Amino acid sequence: MTLKTLPFFANAKLHLKLMFEINYRENRLSYFYSILAFNVIIPLVLSLISLLLTAGTYYFSQDHEQGVGLVLIFGAWIILMIVNFIISVIVLILSITSGVRRLHDLGKSGMTILWVYLIGIVLSILVVGVFIIMGFHLYLLFARTKEGAHPFSELDNPFLVER
Image (tube, rainbow, N blue to C red):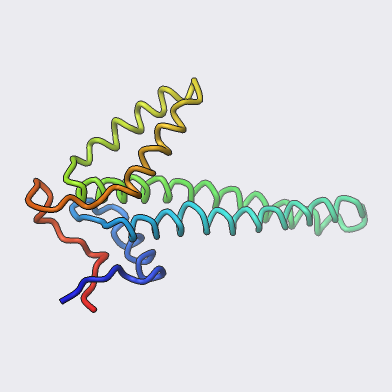
């Protein structure tokens, strides 16, 4: 019996399904997939849509006879900003719960992520906090799974399937 990580899209769907669940473990590849899907691909697509709407707003603002088109595009841009905010909140929740599951896989308490984020927010005044949070997520991405018995070793890893 060999266990493999779920494919990319199945993994992203499972992350959304387990958005509020922390009583699991998560391996490195599934953590990487969550970062790739929710912190890279989705924001990139939303940025491209925003860029197109901004270009459309600029195009319609040059021709004053098409004021209706300008209003429609500006309205779509406002809706996109609201969607961006909602997706940002979802990505923050996914990032925290995924980080807690990854910490469980490393044999550490999920409270660690709370302290890292609090220290990062406080030190963001000095612009150092962003690097602390980024470094912490890089650690979670590259740290090996803790083998042997630890407080979280009995938790399941739903991101692994038999092949």
